[in-house]
Image (cartoon, rainbow, N blue to C red; front, side, top):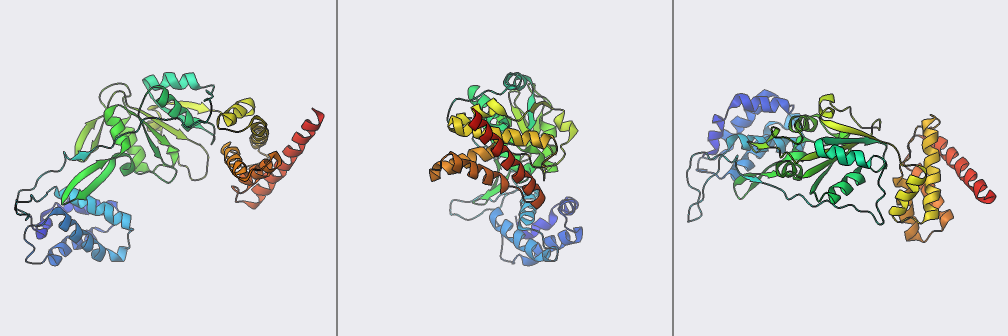
Length: 387
């Protein structure tokens, strides 16, 4: 196929594709025209790799005024190549031969989903909602919502490990697109193939998948999930990848976690949430928090100090005296640093305080939390003297 033949592609589809990505349809026409103008007369039969290079060069010149991101350009190039669906066979002497367009829909490279592991230094402490999680996972996809550091993610890893399941993990805190779930087209040695992601492989094979902090995900990812999580435990759900319709395995389970009300999060589609059994996860406080911290390696007296502070700050937050909700992760990180520095318990308290305050940007919020911490430590010292 000559590069100039790309002018014969469906221009209406290409213009629609360009418009969806914020590019004017006239610019798309310029891209096609540029392909014809840039192709030398001696080009002959071209491999898809060379064509892709010319396409990208044309894109860079034709839409320079619109200044799209490199990611936008690459997405458009991949979609253009996907529309062409051709490859040039190589003859025995190493030259390309003429051939009719060959569909690449069937070339999908499936990722291997890893076995689930639960990274806990000591014995895992089952939360009060553990039995509900076990039962819900047998019949439905599952949503865990609750405050940060309440054990949502760890519980899914532990359950998958106990059930002997493979677990694909996708973190959405930096934004999540559909392509992060299913993968994307790639080009190697003049051949296009679809590099399927772990999430797509888990859906096809009947493994489990976890989308952590799902309410940071973009709309196209949530829309994709909405279509392929409709029939947990039964046949019928499908998704499209590389031009093929793939059946979702009845054993596939999707778990999502989210921290509602945090900055940067988005409202989730109600139709999507309707496909998940929701478990409201309470924060770990008091003795339960002590047990969790000890399971991660904290000595008992350090864990009790941390639990006393985190629990008191959470109750202060519930009373609307502060706006910052403290995560138990601050206690874990502070101890890891204290352990490296050989700090005593007093040093650990200072590191824990710093670990919390450095996460608060607003000056008045930081001063309010700092005041509460001083009051809590003073109360704890009084209790220690009187015990």
